[in-house]
Length: 160
Image 1 (cartoon, rainbow, N blue to C red):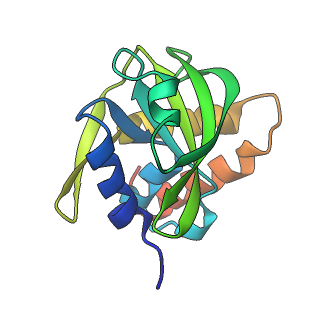
Image 2 (cartoon, rainbow, N blue to C red):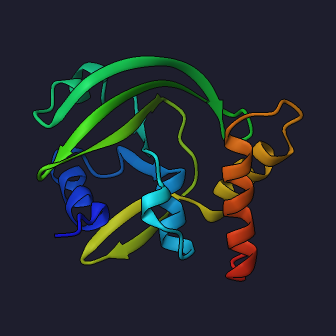
């Protein structure tokens, strides 16, 4: 059986987290906009509204394990400061890696319907902005080739 993170995983998120208290950002957004192989997604980024949830709330959920603090980052044109925690999340018999990004500042989001789920995701404009910043960053990083690949796939699919 092929594991479908969007069908099984988003059901889990919708059951466990209050509506509009979280949204998907990063790699998971690519799935909705371009034909990007899900096997290339290393982790799933979820921005959590820190005015509603604390790291303890998430780390105490039954299916979350190995919950560790990874540091703080500035996101979306340096406007959103996040404390990032990484964990494993067990969905069915599969563990996926999730970066939980806690912030009291939110970004504009859009809604996508996926198999009867109304999913809150980062806006395409915001995602493209982050990818372009990563590609154009003067400091070389491992993320640059991945960001360039994703931007190129947007151009090929005429998304931008």
